[in-house]
Image 1 (cartoon, helix red, strand yellow):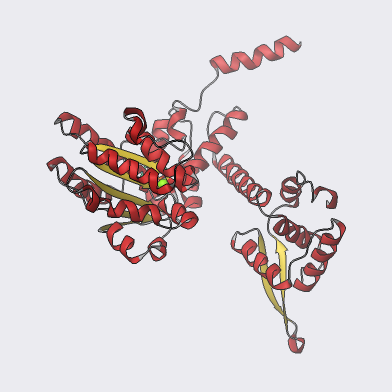
Image 2 (cartoon, rainbow, N blue to C red):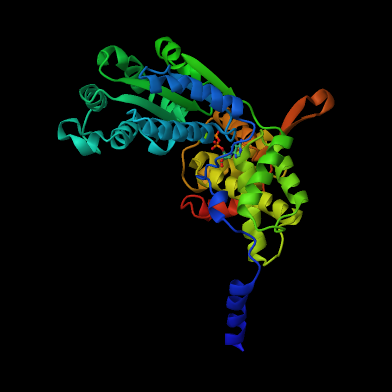
Length: 403
Ligand SMILES: Nc1ncnc2c1ncn2[C@@H]1O[C@H](COP(=O)(O)OP(=O)(O)O)[C@@H](O)[C@H]1O
Ligand SMILES: [Mg+2]
């Protein structure tokens, strides 16, 4: 009996209908060759960079736009084509792409640049070690390496805003000034990609004007554009007839509401497909998209709460435990919870700040209620399921005793 049952599963896996024909096309790193609605942006970047094929230094370029607007995909696509052309015509260029967010520290950004550029492989004198050098020394080695080899470098720093948020703009200062120092022996053109629209405000004026010799803004996609992007991606990813048009439309509508983010749209498609596969459905339908949306939201909320500070967690728990949701009541509960676990308390003002951060993250809702001549009060409520909160808090050694 048991073995029949198992056989059945395996038989289905072999002969059953596969929804997905190319799983890779739904992953985060996949860059499609065709990027509809980004022709103008691609052309602008290509125009700026094309100077390098005439051995000139392309202007520095700052690309910015909200997450999921296709910045990384477009830049990578143009760079790939540029590399092909330069090889075709035997023109030497050095393209280095690093991601400042995944690198996590400024030093790691320099290390990644050195690795990608080949500094570390070729010449011991210029080696940027994994640790141990000062930032200045590491930068010097990279620049000396460029100078000695007369390299024409296009340096792409993706998610450049996270580098500046954490470590200021020192590295950018060195790289934007580098050309003066290289004295015609090689050059660096810098392409910065930023998810933050206000990123420029955080830069030293000299770095700002140098980095944004050229600027390009990516606007969010409309629902109609997302629909077409998803239609094209579905044709690559799914077997024919394995996804309904209605579910693609729903995906586009949901992602359209979330700032026209193409990444969210594609994530939704992937998670929905996984849910449908697990159910052994023969077609992805709207129900799967809705379930995927719930799962993604839940996962995100879980991660946010799990990774927040103990005080923020205590505030979340206090709001959950409060009957009235009134700020005074929440604060009293917070104080009593801190007492139980013998933890320092924060002032009411700090707690108010934490509450408004939670509000911005969409984890709570807050309403001001009027009590006529007795004034007004703020009522806060948790906006996510209590299961998600308890799941996220239960691994915290401080908090688990309070649940
Ligand atoms: N115009 C487009 N056509 C097809 N896919 C796109 C398009 N724009 C973005 N994507 C896809 O959406 C996802 C997010 O794009 P990405 O370039 O990473 O955005 P950003 O860098 O602006 O955050 C990627 O999977 C990318 O392939
Ligand atoms: Mg990106």
